[in-house]
Length: 85
Image (cartoon, rainbow, N blue to C red):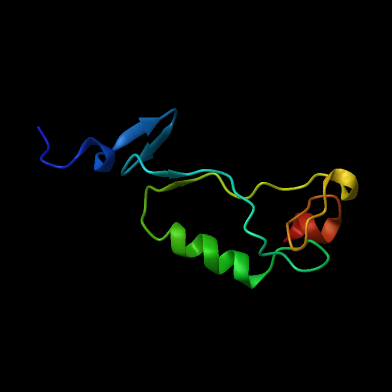
């Protein structure tokens, strides 16, 4: 029996073994540029949150078309540059 709270104990989710039960849900962090392309700021942001091995991140809520909402600096996937980023 582990003395750690259950939240910090390993768990298997499907085929993925996680080191704890804390997960980050999809959010829109407004870290893209004006053309809705992710850059170094997004890499830094998610890199910091994934620095513990076995961490589950369900990343960015992403717009699929220019007419889908277009808030400032949110990522998109309707152009080749966005998809590549």
